[in-house]
Length: 266
Image (cartoon, rainbow, N blue to C red; front, side):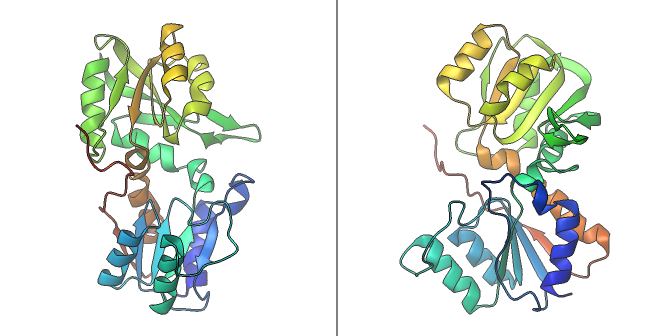
């Protein structure tokens, strides 16, 4: 398959037009005509992921996070990002990003997160697009059986990859939980939507002290705060399956390299 053909499959699932205006998605480096045999999926375009791709012999890396989110005027090998670009180009490894267009896709990042923490049945967006009720940010779903908040937190911890920070819980651990909202990545902006959604708990990442404290104190759902990387990692296998199920003749691999910013907790 050519890189163009692989990208066409990915963009049918994750339309670039659905990315936020501030986002940077699509092909970062690579010749559209080059042949692709191996595709590595990872959350972050960082040096250790680049080395994993080279060691495995990947022709393409698909990441969730952009390399240059805010643009750049230089790719000189004087910075970590520049060095990565030089290394990838030197070894003819392409880099492609699906970010907010994968967040809002159906299925997308939050669908994979919902399944990873044990939600079953139909999932609906927490904040749907006005023109498409099946696409949007976050997901709402049900647990197969009600459980306590403490039990659900333990179940979520088992379903997500382990990180230094683990999970943080805000709320009564004995609180019954059956209806759950989740959002991969930073979820501060969805606290209002979670409050209005009649859910028992909202699981996301990067929650801040004051908004989280005020949210719980004012009677909102319980909160579970996970590592940013961990909430988005389950999507990688979902994205890889898009290629596998499309009939594209490439080998796929999901990176298990932990690229969360925090490396140890005390």
